[in-house]
Amino acid sequence: MQISDVFRAASAAVNRGATALITSPRWGRIVGLGLTEIRYTGRRSGRSVVLPVGYRRRGSDILIGVAMPDGKKWWRNFTGAGAPLTILLGGAQRSGHAVATRDPRGRVTVTVRLDD
Image 1 (cartoon, rainbow, N blue to C red):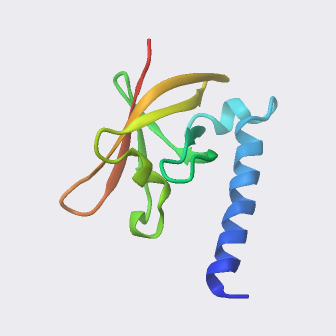
Image 2: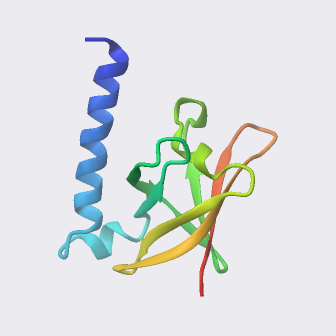
């Protein structure tokens, strides 16, 4: 087994645990203050993806910072004109449009504009 396989398996386990906490009736309100779940369709694979992410609000926008972006691929689904997604906020699924941008320092932020 290669290190990348071990990392991928560990990452999947952590994501499942975080998603369980976010959607938990007991812990979801507390955990959901800084973590949420996004759902989107992979641009190349066409598969449905569910992913826990950290977020913060700025006005009416939802900002998702991507830690170590060069080691991750999911945010690339939202480059260019972006793509639709669903985000869990306050216990309800909300639809929106997400666009990923990289600043001059290499940091990546995915900005979500919610549909009305």
